[in-house]
Amino acid sequence: QVQLVESGGGLVQSGGSLRLSCTTSRFTLDKYAIIWSRQAPGKPREGVSCISSSDDNTYYTDSVNGRFTISRDSGKNTVYLQMNNLKPEDTAVYYCATDVICAWTVQGGQGLVVPSGGLGSWGQGTQVTVSS
Image 1 (cartoon, rainbow, N blue to C red):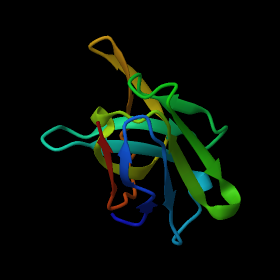
Image 2 (cartoon, rainbow, N blue to C red; image 1 turned 120 degrees about the horizontal axis):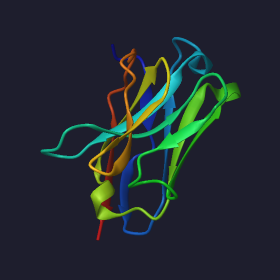
Image 3 (tube, rainbow, N blue to C red; image 1 turned 30 degrees about the horizontal axis):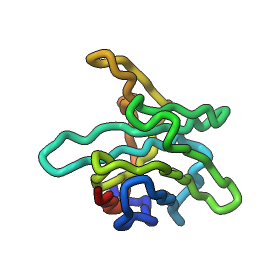
């Protein structure tokens, strides 16, 4: 069910930065792992990053590791995704969701953040467009 709100998307040139935010007024995000995913046109949704609920451990898909940083501000009940050195292939609609735990796997030689199977609330997404 849609209970989260994403914001911060926009149009940026290659190499630029954006910071996405994920928040809700309905419940406390601290109780959940938060996963950021993205979906480009014609492609399946893929996990990007996850922050755990218990110890704020962070996880990244290989393609964004070193460029994206996920963080949590408990006082603002908000999870952020700082995206630096953006590339045209990062263009997608970005979604945040609550999950039970963070999960990470290797597929085709690439490390991927994946939903653990306990997805709860989603947002409606925010568009990120990176021009070359």
